[in-house]
Length: 168
View 1: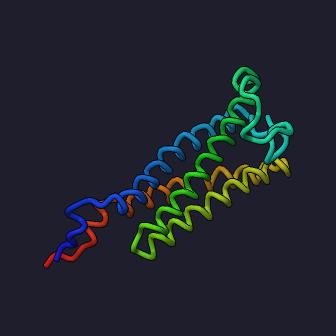
View 2: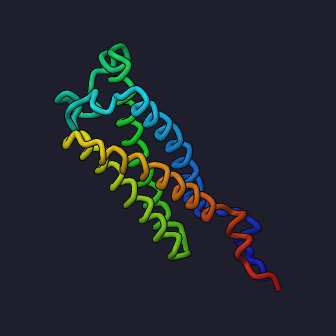
């Protein structure tokens, strides 16, 4: 028997997938800009963390950021994108926790949030310790997080849910 709820999309079931897709769409440019940070050797353009030259990350003067040196632009931009991805991961976990009926998908949303927290911590630790090995690990965890986020988007999709229903 096919679940009647699958035939008529319910807004409640839509939100986890929408947030997962948003997370994937925000993570891709984050990885791309992270690659720019590595390519241009801009990893230490901002020597403090979690602040930016003593400013709150979100309150750093935009004129200095946008019109300053390119390495500052990409490093601070990478941090801002990382913060955005972290906030989206929090929202995705909350929405999934409230709307999803499959416990393993809720657990996956928690894993997504945990991995983005670890990744942010690795990025910050790289700055604080000024350690290249931590930067390498940070560079490996980023694509792994992206793969997890894509998997999360797939399992929250309506197509995945409908393919899991037994047909009688």
